[in-house]
Image 1 (cartoon, rainbow, N blue to C red):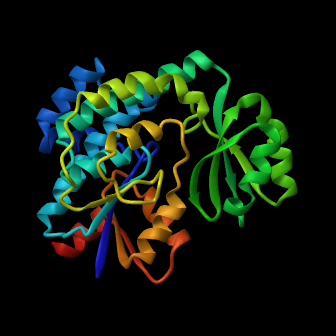
Image 2 (image 1 turned 30 degrees about the horizontal axis):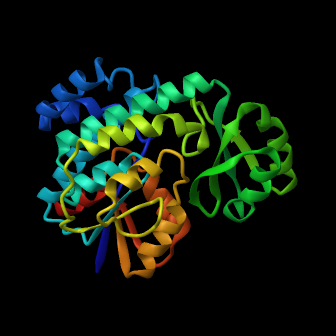
Length: 288
């Protein structure tokens, strides 16, 4: 059985995250308070600046707990910010450097969105969403930001276009739902954040992966271009559906979501069949 361990992105926060991190990695919690300049867990709903480092810390702790069960990952992958935690699991960078990167990433994305002002995200839900997303996006100057599953795609762009895009979506049998975010993430709207993030990436020493880590931007394993791919992820779409399909085609039959949350487990079940999809909590319970 080939196993892929998945690391979640923004929106996966859970109420117990802080307590779990404090109990198992107090050093990581202390560093999070330092690099964020506030408690990201207490302000997790106040934007990417806080949500990203909080979810990252919880994911690293969840991975360490999974490792204690004896789980052997054949490959890892992360959704958006989850890519950084996945690279930590693969041995490409250490948890502390990963946290510094995520804190910078979250801050830059929030600041870029706030400066631009008019950017946001629109979810398309329904049968055939992945196939019809371009028909909704292109006429209204929007771009695909997250191709999550066959029935769930997220668009990025100007809020002013959302009303007309919603009408187009309805005509195609899809439901359009505006998301409560302050920026058009994974789109050209984030371009001004790239330069400073590239500088932060240049200060990090990346090692060769000990296990394969697949990029959800290219759907291929990271090589010696980790910094470039992480920088690209700010302005390019998350191809999560395609990533899952590629992993399955490569022989993965078990997908384990580290946590926090269980968003990715649901996306796996909606995207590929004849596989086992479970959360870290379910695996831990089975191992107990």
